[in-house]
Image 1: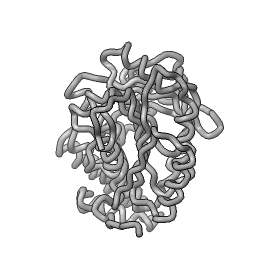
Image 2: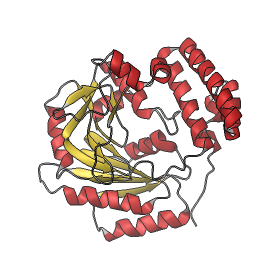
Image 3: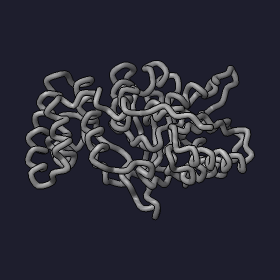
Image 4: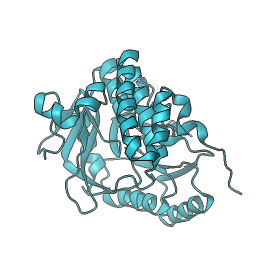
Length: 317
């Protein structure tokens, strides 16, 4: 549980049936940080994985023999935001949170030290991120534009072409730190005070749009921004724990429409939902598996249909 003991950074990682990825991610953090100028901890939240995966993870983490690691298990799957918030509840009093996906590896030595120094020298920064790479260390887009009606209908490339100053080129390689709308949730280095002030992640969002929502609240409430810090890098295998099926597609649309109404109002949600109803009606004629998504949209894609409300409580013997 949270104590008065202070650390610079609390790293929070979620495991869901991918213990080997999680073990590798934790090991990578420990091995890549050797400077005495930074104190940190690693909190691993098991999001109700299968018993065998959890037990494997527990054994693997024990082999690291590190006092810096805390393993917490949730009795049900709380999703991305909920899992990270559970980790926050077990974090020490820290200056920064580093929310790091379990399918990542550190590339830059002492990355957390570099990010901490950047944040301390950038007063209007709430969140920063290293440059994301794929498993072959090739460039991968790390920045994105706020989820919105115009982004969904006009698409990112159109917005980047029409309004290049507002919508930065996501596929461009940047050499220096740059202010962006938001960074991907796979590695978010966040000022803990700002994060706590706005209430952290919205746990109504189970899997998608958490980083866009958080960044918008930080901007609206505190006038604080996201930055990409390309001098630092990390590898992201991307969505190792997500089986992309029609249920996940439905979850994505439910989250998007919830996010749209929350930040842009009922009318924007209605327009976007109507657009999706027409779009996926036509898609369903060709791909019948999309009928289920279309029916969900026709019902208004209520948050009550989220996977969040379908999780069961499980115990380990």
